[in-house]
Image (tube, rainbow, N blue to C red; front, side, top):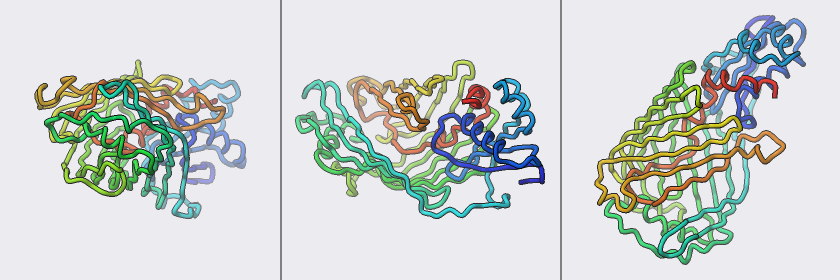
Length: 381
């Protein structure tokens, strides 16, 4: 509380996809429970210990436009700003018992379509996902998977790639995880914010089924602009095919500089990533995707690097498409989780990037004034 007539709260949540909806719920709760002496409200969101936005509004303005749900006028009289979180600035800091744990379970189908061994190979897995918070900005995310039923044993196609086998040994990984528990991810993340627009993440551990290692990701993302610039550097080692804790001999350093641009009218996000890939080839990846009002996201990409078409092999260059669907479309409850599917016509070793959990662009998704401008009618959902 900055003065006797203003009430400010800071909160975190994992429930709502829309930051406007989260802010609206928080403001309405404050309006209902606050004494009449409070004239102004300010709500601010924190994710992974990093501030994303601050929403300020006069109480009478909030009540007036809530009465007939006029989100256009409410937006005009509200103040939406970037937020740099410092817990020492607040009078009341509730005690949090760390570590805090979150768990979920569910099925997943891993598939391989096409090839000389057969048209479809599938592996039905039961996943166990967890996140352990040691502090607000330090967490361990894990994903364990058990193969329930599969026909991966019939896959036999060996890699003919002349490049380091960073992806084309996929058959060995698919068969190596048959009928056993595998560790798909066990990644430790540390987050830090510098000012209102700079974000940093340090990560180490098992990133994906094929690679483990350590490194960092940095992001410059101005709150009032529709662009961002990211930098990432990783020292990684290839994992053994049984996807436990053993490693193979292949190690490399991979890194990229990425420019993001969000086209406001179409809500299409363009990203251009350039740098060094897992097979030690260098080049760029162009990705574009559109997020619809429902939260569904569709995208496609292609990559070109300094290896020849002969070295790359069948397909000539890397390309594919993907989509993400919010789980809440099929649920009566608000849920922030998604499920996705993608298709890469052929798996080769060129232009392959490391896969990892919680990229900074997604973690700081709410740190954008454009998100509020485009979706401000969510304030009344």
